[in-house]
Image (cartoon, rainbow, N blue to C red):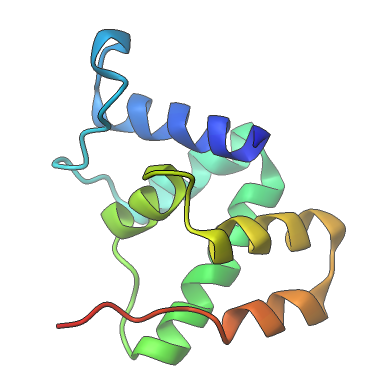
Amino acid sequence: MRHLCIAFLLSISASGVTLAQAETPDFAGDVPIENYLALLAQVAPPARDGAEAYMAAFQARCGRSLKTVELRRAFAQGSGDPTLLAMVRASHARDRAEIQRLGANIACPRS
C-alpha cells in the first residue's frame, strides 16, 4: 500500500496535477523514462528496481519498450498493476527468482 501511495504522489507531481485534481491522475503529459525512474529512486529505491524489472520483462514478452505513461498508469491506476507491485515487493526482498516468475505474468497490450 505504501508503494501505491508513493507511486500516486509521483504521478501527480510528474504530471503537474494539483491536489484538488488528485482524484483523477492526468497521464496526458509524458516525461522521459530516465526522469521518472530517477524520481522513483529518490522516493523508494525498490520501486525503481521493481519498475526496471517490469520494464525488462515487458520488453522481453511484448517486443517493445514500455512507455513512461504506461509505467505511470501501471503504478497509479486503480490499485496498481498487481504484477508491477509484486515485482517492487520482490525487489525489496531481493528475490530474483520471484522477479523472474512474475515477469512471465506481464500482459501485453493489444495493438
